[in-house]
Amino acid sequence: MCFHFGWGTAIGLFVLGLTAWQFWQHVHTHRWDRTEGIVEGHDVRTKYGPDAVTFYESYPIYRYTVNGIERRGTRVSVYDTSEGTTRADAMETIARRFPLHARITVYYDRENPGRTVLQRDLEVVRPLLFVAGAVVFIIADHPFMC
Figure 1 (cartoon, rainbow, N blue to C red):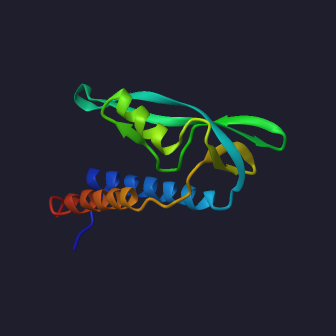
Figure 2: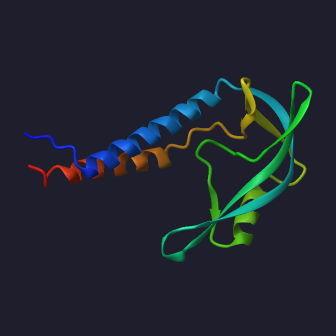
Figure 3: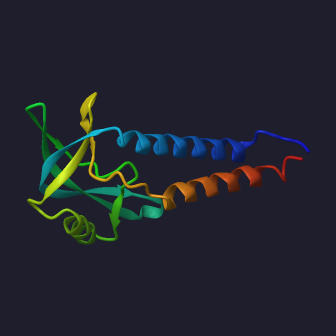
């Protein structure tokens, strides 16, 4: 049995490390304090993918107060990307999840109250897909190296 550290292994280990880091961030949010916030609006970021494919990432804009200081946030969760095929679709998706003027629970980092999330639920599918992809890269790298 031989082990060679090729590009597939390097990519696989990088993806595993990134997934572990995101998972740790998610676990860390469960130690954060909570406060009440209000949804002030919604916005959409335009992202461009390969082959000139356009993606739209929607997010709420919310206001919350920590230690008497009013702040604003846009992050939904550690893993969240609310994408749509059109700008209107993305906006509709986020507006349905977080209606305008709705009262919401905002989780914030005590040490850095500007770091917030609205949801702390663990999303299992995305991390598992990343791990599976990383394993495929690592395994695929080895038959060609020995």
